[in-house]
Amino acid sequence: MTRRVKLKEVCREITVGHVGPMANEYVESGIPFLRSQNISPFRLEDASIKFISNDFHKRLKKSALAPGDVVVVRTGYPGTACVVPKRFPVANCADLVILRPSTEIDGYFLCCLFNSVWGQRTVAGSLVGVAQQHFNIGVAKEMEINLPPLPVQKNIASILSAYDDQIENNIRRIKILGEVAQMIYREWFVNFRFPGHEKVKVVDSGIGAIPHGWRVGALQDAVVLQRGFDLPTAQRQPGTVPILAATGINGTHSVAKVKGPGVVTGRSGSLGVVLLVLDDFWPLNTTLWVKEFRQSTPAHAYFTLNNLKLSGFNSGAAVPTLNRNDIQNLPLILPETKVLDAFDDCVMPLFRLQNNLKATNANLRQTRDLLLPKLMSGEISVEHVETEAVAQGV
Image: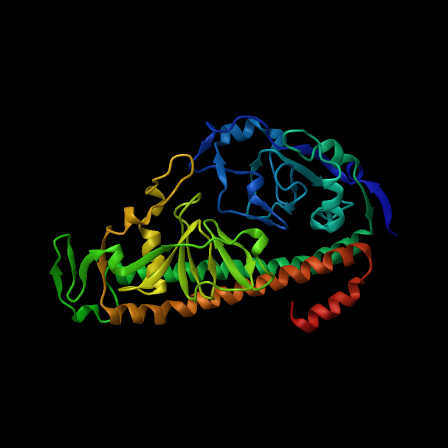
C-alpha cells in the first residue's frame, strides 16, 4: 500500500557536497569530483569531470560518493537528479545534495521522483537565496512523497531504466562512430595512408613531404567562410530547421538559410566549436559557416577546422571573437579531389548513422518523460507498460 513519508524517513542520510574554493585542489587524474554540470536527468556526464587527490578526498568524508547514491543539483538547474553509477566505485562532489537511500526506497525510483514534473515543481517552489537561488538539504529532508511498496518501485525503476540503458548504449555508439571517423581522417590526411597511397610518390613541398598531386595552399583555398545571419527570437517560427549558434543548436525555425550538409564554427562568444550539419539549417550571426567548399568537402572541412584549433585566434576583448580574415591564410595541405570524394563516401555514412541514433535517443527520452509522471501517479499500471515494452522490444 502506498504511504506518505518524508525523504528523511526513507534515506539513511541526506547531506550536501563540499562547498568551498576548489581551484587549487584539482589534479590531472585521481578521484572523480562531480559538479552540477556533470548531472543531467538520469545521467552522469563524464566529459567535464574534474579530479582531486586521494588525500583531499579523505578530508571530504561527508561528500564521498558510492554507487547507488542519488545526487541532486542545488544551483543552476535545481532538482536535476541521477544515480551514481557502478563505474564510479569511488567519487566525491561539490555543491550537490546527496541522498543515500535506505532499504525502503529504490535509488532509481528516488531519481525518478526528482526528475518528474512533480519533483521539478516541488523543488522550484522551495528554492532559497537572493542573488542565486538553490535547493538545500533542509528542504530535501522535509519533502513528502507518495511511496509505493518496494516491488512496485523496482518495477517502475526497471521500466524507465530500460529506456536509459538504450539511450546510454546509443550514446556509446555515437562516440565510437565519431572516433572511427576521426581515426580515418588522421590516417588519410595526417599520416597520408589513404587507399592506394603505396602507389603514390612522396615529394617535398617546402614544409615537408606530401603525396604527389597534393599541394600546399591556405585555408581560403579549401573553404570560403561567411558570417551567419540575424534571427531575433521574436521572428522565429515553429519548424524543424535547426538554428546554429556558436555553442551548437539554439532552437528551430520554419525556414532554412543554408542547404546541408554544411559546416559551422563559433565566431563570437564560444570559439573552437565546429559542427557538421547534415540537414538544411540557419546559422546565426555568432557563427561562421562554410559558404563554398573549394578543395574540401563537408566531412574533410569539419575535421580540418577542428584540427586548426580556432579558439586560439581570439581577436576580441570583452567577448571572444574569431575574425575570418585572421585565419583564411593559414597554411594547409590540399589533397587531390578524388581522395576527398573517397573520404566523404567513407565517413558520411558514419555521420548519418550518428544522426539517426541521436533522433532515436530524442524519441526514447520523450517516451520516457511522458511515461514518468503517469507511472509515478499510478495513472498507467506497471503491468500495462511492461507488456507494451516487450512488444516494442525496449
